[in-house]
Length: 409
Image (cartoon, rainbow, N blue to C red; front, side):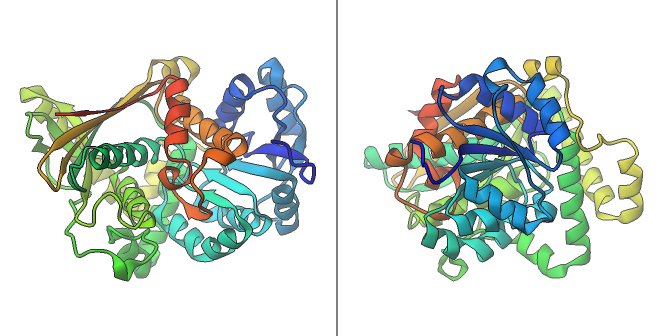
């Protein structure tokens, strides 16, 4: 497991941030004894404070000072560890130097981004380098987009094992209870700022295959819209647009393409938010749709964005411990195959999905990269959770208490 040429097996970069602290606390409880973990960030004094508040297993972890604006410090950080898990966002502002340092050093990397523009740029700048060095660069290792990515993988594997053909129509219906942190809001703000000033970025964000490894090779398959009016599923549930769909859907399509379209070249994949049944469900779906449209419009314009900044959470803040514990998520993913057979994947977990559950997801991704190298798919470069870790990550998350199951319907 240990590499004597590297001081650490796993580094948490951004450990003083809201989600970074949650990740560090999870690893202190979940990592096996002997795994060499370190905490990294811009301020040693703040790192010392965070370390002192972690479970006892973390009290001896080394501290590393590194700054995303200091290329030399990032190069040294990446060269010192086998795996780096970063929570430093917005990634479109701060993330590229970190990815580049890991790709050059052959260091496995995992993040929590939900930003299409950042991932596209990271692919273009680091994929070839990482394939040469053997680094696994794994984006979207939290609620964005592990449940979506792994459920599609499991559905495709089950259909293949049954001889049912490739996936054709797949729709994820998400329900959850959770909150927002200042870091999430800052990430959303950064994306809207860039989209507002760059027409090319807007075109890229609107492309359903924006993260494809080979855009020209993608099949001419019309994909479901990321947003629209309230609608109903075949079993009568009202749905509204899902705020994470514009990112998650592109990650799933990238996973399909990276595996030579093993899920099916005719795959149509979409995501919506479940709002319930009957009149209450219709009212909720209408309210959510209206609220999301209003929020997007307000974030698109500098004056209204400035007004929202006065009431939205500030970076470094987020849901309290009790709120995180009360949270939960569930995703029901219905699939129809080329032969007409139907399957449903269910992914679920306890804890606020964007924070408590995300700390589990990123933590198990990082542990998988650090401990399970011999069992992982033989791939390097810019990857997704499904293509970098696949069934190994599913097993880890099941052991951690999350549900991943597929049944034929």
